[in-house]
Amino acid sequence: MKKVAIIGGGASGLFSAILCAKNGAEVHLFEQNARCSKKILVSGNGRCNISNKNLSPNDFFGQNPAFVAFGLGEFGFAAFEKFVNSLGLILETKEDGRAYPLSNEAKSVAKIFEEVAKILGVHFHLESKITDIKKLLTEYDSVIVATGSEAASHLGGNADGYNFAKEFGHTLIPTYPSLVQLHINSPLPNKMSGAKLNAEVTLLLNHKKVSRVFGDVLFTNYGVSGFAILDISQMASVALMNYEAVDISINLLPTYNMQLLSAHIAKVALNVPELSILEILAGLIPLKIGQVLLESLEINPNSKAENIHTKLAKKIANALLNWRFEVSDTHGFRHAEVSGGGVDTLEINPKTMESLKQKNLYFCGEVLDVVGRRGGYNFAWAWASAYLAAKDITKIR
Ligand SMILES: Cc1cc2nc3c(=O)[nH]c(=O)nc-3n(C[C@H](O)[C@H](O)[C@H](O)COP(=O)(O)OP(=O)(O)OC[C@H]3O[C@@H](n4cnc5c(N)ncnc54)[C@H](O)[C@@H]3O)c2cc1C
Image 1 (tube, rainbow, N blue to C red):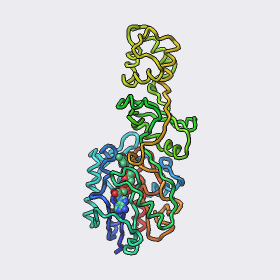
Image 2: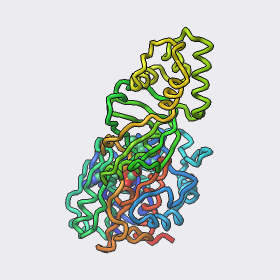
Image 3: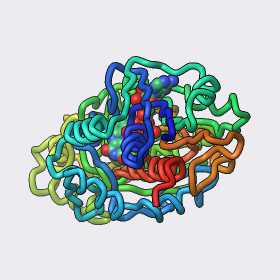
Image 4: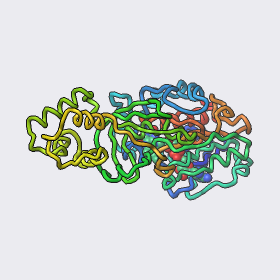
């Protein structure tokens, strides 16, 4: 019987443990925390966006983008869904392709995976932080490094996997926080902290527009958060790492254009000249945001609407549709959902996840230089890479 050691009881470690044990291996799972699955439990705001029906290599970033193609082909959404259905875990797929457990609870995913692993005889070694990987390799036939990334250190995120890889001469691609909030070089977000709205966010790198997304934006004491921000954060984070100028332009009213909006403001001002300029904005955006926006334009919010002339209406409309902020930093690994960079995938067999530097040593999940978009892609990679490693180790047919 093959003896397999798995370092890390997160998504890819737990899943590879199940598959190795199902195929007859003696599996020992080492987890530094007192329990497994910490990131699964908090994922998708407690709902676990477990995968995505529309998986493609284009949804992933890394120095070697083609690396994920084989894994996604071998163990894509349909194969994953079929497998978890067989364990009784039923998924619900939304219109945009995002899949969640039908229970709508991340806990059910962790519970089922952990219980199935126990039933299959996986030996759980909790509160067992591995420090000596070379020793482990002498004691087991195969070792899987499933230690994840530095993201979310309070849930177990650390750099151990990178250090293990270095011991075998692997190259590391510099890591950076991704799916993360952004810091803004201005006191304005702090002044509207807590205000939230649906907006269109354009990312500018070195003053050129590179990406545009729709979604919610939340102003905070350090800058901006919300799904739209997380969605552009990958590119922003890489650019910051490369010392590029990073700016965002927030369109607070994406359903309007310049002409429509300035005409609307001018018309309301004409209809109800007794309203304050701030009150006119309050009909369009949250009050707190309107107050700060007018302040940034040096317009008295209490000034009467009758004072709005065409030029002023255009000035306000322009700010509403194109409010620029300079991004100074990300909110850091601790707050990031994932990390980009990691073990160089050119040194890993894309069909097996085995190290090309050390036989019987495997890497899966986020420790590798693979990071997905928001939408279930990071778990999809954890499952697919775990499948490939387990398949190779136990020769699943
Ligand atoms: C708040 C949040 C929400 C998220 N939501 C989603 C989502 O909805 N959909 C999605 O696709 N992705 C989501 N992600 C990302 C997803 O959780 C990760 O991509 C995924 O968990 C990575 O799996 P992994 O197995 O590589 O690492 P992890 O799941 O992080 O597991 C690594 C494990 O290794 C352990 N470990 C580390 N070093 C050692 C050591 N030396 N010895 C023993 N154990 C060790 C850690 O404690 C940890 O348990 C979210 C992440 C966060 C933080």
